[in-house]
Image (cartoon, rainbow, N blue to C red):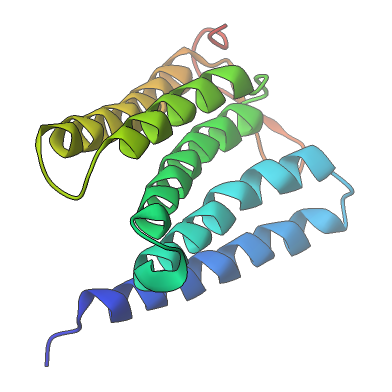
Length: 161
């Protein structure tokens, strides 16, 4: 028996939702609202993305798929921001919003097939890869990681701007 894509996406949506709730509850007692929001955001956004991909008929036309792709890019970007918060750096929200907005605008111009669809997909994948690269650079350059117990573990240099 091979699982079909909607089943895998459904399982992913539930797991992402559970992880998002876990981060909300684990940080809730410490009243660290910013940390709680950033740690939960990638998983909650990923859950919404998965749900939109499971039921593409939820919205007319390609809007469920476009919004699903937007939430997927936002989830990866929020993961990068959560890492920055964990490292003690300030989040770079404008970079995240600009990149995801550009991707969404391209997807609005694209149809279900054709050159614009390929360009939109390639651009979205490039943005997701850039979020991964930025996270790797932040890890490489950082001075410390704040552990849940409030202790610092030294790493390398400093936060990127």
